Amino acid sequence: MTSRSNIGIGWRHPHYQELVDRLPTLDFLEVHSENFFGNGGAALTVLMQGRSHYPISLHGVGLALGSASGIDEWHLNKLAHLVAQVDPIRVSDHACFARGSVERQGQMVNVHGADLLPLPFNQEALDVMCANVSQVQDRLKRRIAVENLSAYISFTESDMAETEFLNQLAQRTGCELLVDVNNIYVNALNDQIQQRCTNPLQQCKDWLNQIRPDAVAEIHLAGHIDCGDIVVDDHGSRIKAPVWDLYQHAIQLFGSVPTLIEWDTDIPALDVLLDEAQHASQICKACLATEVTA
Image (cartoon, rainbow, N blue to C red; front, top):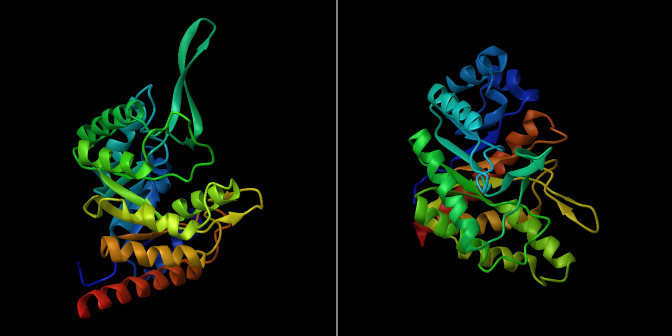
């Protein structure tokens, strides 16, 4: 276990200039890959300016790694070009599908769902996911990290646990895992609403206990909103107390894994994100100190 925390924030457009002007103490910045697929332009100029001060993590939302119709070559080529320019410390995307084939006027065409849609956890879906992840890694010539989803539907075709699915994915492809702690808590809360769970916090701890520690490359933390009949992973508020508790449990299991503060809607002042990052750093350092004295 390393002796320091490793905390970053999601770098979003409202904070582009302020962050470069202030250069706060952070270990890395994470951006959404697809926002920088254009050839040149102001966005890429800003990204490279940030890159001169901080390591950059590229987090994608469009590879659709679980899609049976395969990886979109245009998207993969754009990502490969961006990776070559930025030389990021990590590249990540989600365990989801978003692309599929439909018939239109007698021809099969690919469509994109513009969402992160959950997968059934079974052997067929795992085989598809492994093939797609391997294709991406071969093209990028590096390992990628795959994130667990907040999912609002589940499939009767699932015959394995999500943790088993992710562990097998990492073992078969050599990819890493990005553990989103807020996502697993949102899923547990929705399970409680549907009366499939009586103790959300314990369900999440059990989930974390089942993940291979050596496969975990990054942790995400974010806020969520309780709408009464559903809990939504909206990334639009401060991190809730139970998610902080789960983060502490995750650090005790996985060590000083790079940790990201995500905030994508109702984006507040930069100082709010920095305050969340500082809180994550304090938890991480406390866990490390306990490990040293144990």
